[in-house]
Image: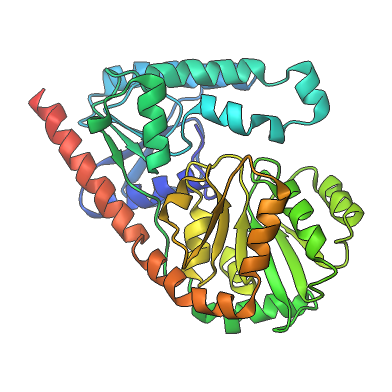
Length: 377
């Protein structure tokens, strides 16, 4: 519904639109609202029907897209949002029911959970997804991880042979180890930290879903034995004051920095030593590849799609439903300076196998294949 400059799906949309326009294709972004076009030859089709509330807005947009696609005569319709009128669908967030079961409770306040707030919005999202991923709804689905592919096949009965896994990619020039002696050191200095400190980085929107509480509880036991340990928390969160109180109550107040939302994630990764994402559910976080490209090992969970790329040289995967002790033990292992140094090269090498250029090339190939199927009828 929204074309914007921020967000993983939004960034992917712009990159694909630019790539296709540069190849001479006519690209139309169908949306409810938008910012400036990513390319002079990319135009918008705005469907902005009147709607009250997010649930009505979501369903109304999907219906508007259905009407528009029926009449527009496009050669190929590629869906990146919650609609059901497409030839090819990219599932960038995984199955919504899985998100509800694994992570939704962590993004709600106790009052919101008690009042059942958001139930209608979830019901609408599930209804749209059921139509979008029905076996006859699309010729092909792109899943951004094997975890998501298995889920789509199991939940919706979509044929596995028609689900293509294309992992997210990373800009290996923007995120690179060489930044550690530049903007990384500058950011550390602004926080009063130096090379003697060991920095665990947490980055993402939605602290609850991404497991910040577990990280804070798991780091607290290490505070006394690791006076060099520091924690940087980056990302947008409306209730940040509550998280700061939780950190203070755990005795981390003087060694944790809440940096809020920033426009320089490359500097944040460059200021860290290890990236920790103890998420309850993530289809495939771009941040994992961004950390690896900067030379940071990654600790994440088995409910992160990106975890399927990690080997023992690049990081560690813990159980999303595991205890704090498991994460504490993983942190103890990876906070060792020698181990961090040894992980830098393999982490970077792994990221270089998953560049954004590779993702675009694979996506363009599938678009071409599906377009040919549509043309054949």
